[in-house]
Length: 232
Image (cartoon, rainbow, N blue to C red; front, side, top):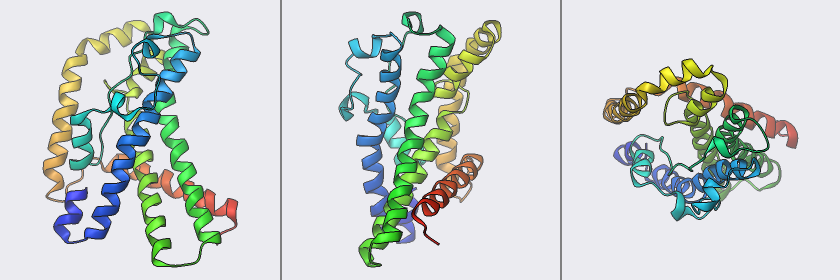
């Protein structure tokens, strides 16, 4: 994503995307993982807390390969939070699994909506300057990345959050049969992302369904923010 802007000579957009991406890696990803850990802790599972992951310290959630995927493909990940559904005391294992898995993507959608509110406030109250344009552009990228992370993580395949949501919804016999192929599915996902990185150089976007949903939700958040602030 950033590389394509650099190759096209759009250095300003490349810099904005790089700064926003750094913010996502060191601020938003920790929030995503903290949301998983906090939800599990509130439901009685201390696994993440005991592992030092009930924190928003970016070092604790930093994953080098996941960060490289952000740079090269535009979609990446942080270090997963360890959770043990057997420890849930406030709800059943299945319900607790769904709640803890959904907490991460929900945090991304919340950040995206708050970012849309910032854009709405800037449109409503700030004078139209070059700084105004840069702020709007930066928060628009922040919305897109957070929505993309939420949508991508909700895909029901390992190791994404959607697979754990599926675990809480599917009958056990189907779930366990599906996860017999966990390692194969994970490797296939990595291969798919590397293929997406290569084909992106030829303007072929393998993530176009995710980007379609991302654009739909992003525009919806901005439209709602404009409605709240009375921006026409």
